[in-house]
Length: 370
Image (cartoon, rainbow, N blue to C red; front, side):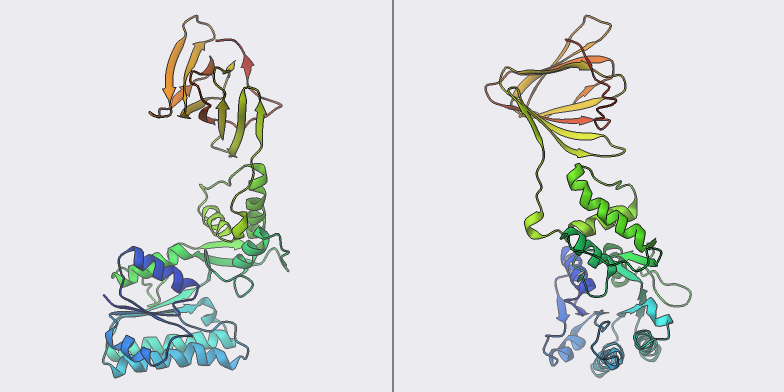
């Protein structure tokens, strides 16, 4: 299948092309501002499906709205007509098409062209009125508040919020792309009014969005991650990470070192506990304590050793020999004092999970020799 994408180098176009290539749709014609206009004829002659994503939303002159959003759409449809190509065509419009402003008027005019073209030729047409689309690869400081907030906060730059209570309707780029692929494959979400829509959308205030993004920035210093069970938070967090400066992908952790080795907290969560790495020197025994409610999981990923456990009201000692060549999880139940000993000649590295983040005021750690 041959697919034409206009606006291929734009935000939605780049994400759509990447997904289509992942799905083995490799015969893609890309048309953008720097494309030779003469190539449009060949593209429109051979295309089996057209994604019309090109448009103007931040022109120097207001007259450019109609030229870019209505004029080029007219040219595209005329070129398809000339080549007698009645392939399906999708157009990206905007919720602004319902508003009486130059941008909305130009989008509304483009919609009418497409609907009339479909009635005239019998071609399938898919008209999507997108609200604010957010996600990776969106240009910051242009026309997306989310992209600007993510970029500036990640880079330590100031942001401006005139009214924290301003409400935004948002869709995530992956949900947009999935719906466009659905249209390509005959599963478009067509509404009774003949418009198509993205089934998943979010309504958030600017204040909510900004607070979340600032919490993402703070999470690196706090060694935490946000609550990713919330769908919007998960998608906004993924978006934020894509705007990290290229020299800031890594961040340091505090290694608590002594003569026995080290213990380093990696991630703390509000509802999934804490993840840490423990390094033990040869011959060293760590632990010898138990917990009332806190429970743990140990995985030795390098070296070899033994994990010993004893229920606090029993004399029976359980031993689990572990090594980095055969990864196993050892559960540390409540009420069992436990320790871990390095039996090898090199450092032993253990990945540890605890059901609670460490609270120095309520450590739930009672020292007792195994």
